[in-house]
Image 1 (cartoon, rainbow, N blue to C red):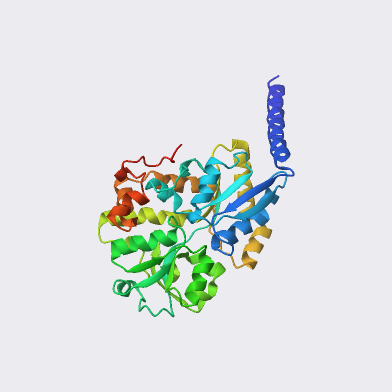
Image 2: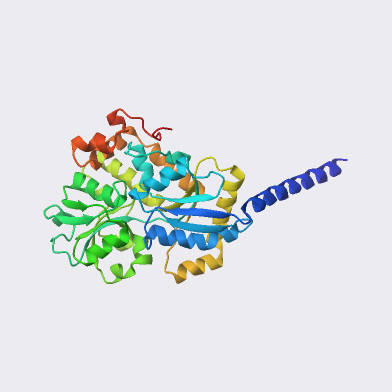
Length: 365
């Protein structure tokens, strides 16, 4: 009798598992998953998202198509706002999350209408240190951190929330450098083109492994000089380049720079809007894990010279939460560092605790 009950239990569990698999298959068959990319065509965000779009669908039951779409506006904030408030939460939307956005939210940044802690991670393809750099042909005289304190270098950046804007501003504040921001470029490609034409001295941020993947000649031919890198430790090839944490001159600033550097660990991560049904979210996360182990995916990445430092969706969730749970003192110090002047602090970060706002909550939610 006991054996019969055990057999029935095993059979029931098997049937339930099969029914769940069929439910995922039935939902995703003939569906399209939109992948919104918070970067311009040809950027690192774009190239890695398109690598994912070529392979992820094959690992999802029902084999849905993955349709990439570039939305390179406002340093990724437009994509995050739309996904959080307007995007379908049925498992048919993925976005690339600009890695500075959880921090920007924690600081009470202007225009935030999302809560990054409610997005759900699917996986991460890449993370590496980000560097502020100056062209080797720059006539500014800036070649390292010390000369950047004495000479002005014009730095190209995109939106106000992007790391290309935020990182140079912070280094100006804590290290006394004189980077002059020229904002409004649509994407990284436009910034590098302007730099190559001599219209700019340098760029506000670019990651080490994206250089190796997208612009390897910049490393091999030493077409730029790395000034400061953002990461929890130095990259091996930039062992002589200080991190922002090391540049800090007091413990509070060092902790603020450590918090800012967590974004480099978030890297190129992919998330869903809140409230995606758990079985579909798990299907997406499982598909990501299968994809990164798939030989065709690995071959495509290698053929395209695209390096990988992967992590699961759970790791992405933990990194986002660690930013949002940061000590108030560190967040407030970052708010001060990122504002161009005291008068603009509450204009740029109106929802910060310093300005009477509510930390870690999406506006209007």
